[in-house]
Length: 404
Image (cartoon, rainbow, N blue to C red):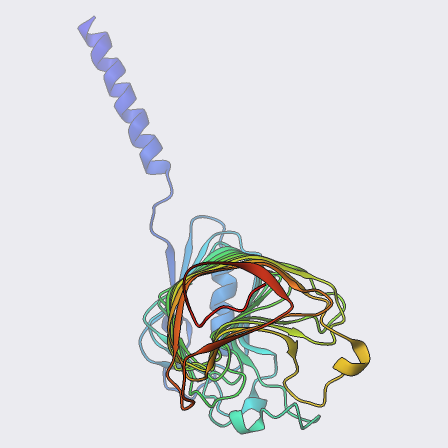
């Protein structure tokens, strides 16, 4: 009997060993771009070498793949990384990816583009250097119909269940990060930097996206720190420092006929420092679409010398003359908007501007504990302006509210 028991135990141990040995190891297959032909000399175009490495990592069928960019400066022309891939991919960037200084040397809308990929992770201590300084004077499309098309730094389209963390994006030619039809994506620990006078260098821009989480991120740009466009839902933004820049903006909305609703936005624990705007919703006054903007929560937000701390602008028209008199008011409906514990200083006397549409007034706007003082050149206390807005007020209110 003892020998049978011993034999059974030995068989179990053997089977366990076979099962453990047959499992795929937890470590990914590493593809070091430098060992696959890339040169960190800051001048050799490594685009083909990078896409070759991507192709090998993407089509590998067993286990995870890891593409590694070591320290050094890797010059890249325009490059696209396209899926679907057969396994999850880590893209670790510890070096600098350097864009062409001449904008015409990038032959696509986005310098580094990821498309049709699931389970992508981008991380590292590295930098995406867009070398935008030469491009910024060319960004004059509102007055020059022949303006050149400038590339955004990094784009994600049809990418799901993915994340980016700890990367630095420096001096983009246009926007830094662009998201289109991206779902379940986390952005954390990212640093985004461009001068305050660099035009259209939005930090993070997204449209037709859902379930995006942005946290612990520092953004300083010449345009919106975060721009939220048509069709974006279930967005959570927390612990973000914004400045310089134009704040966290919803819109502009309503310009095009096929736009979709924007809803379920939470913005909390934010610092706006020296920005032109803080909380901003902008819709075109002569809008082409009827859409709904709803269920927004802004909470625990500090304003430090912000131009327009709270700004709903439903007469948005950046380059007059505008067509409001011909086409009428905005048809974008804003409703169920809560602003709680918003405090700090305004550079202008009007600290709260709620300029809603006459045709579609703002509904159910809640103001709770607002304390924004005038720190600008105009004397006197801060003020609020309300047009076509219905809502309620609780707690401390500086400036004095103007809601119905």
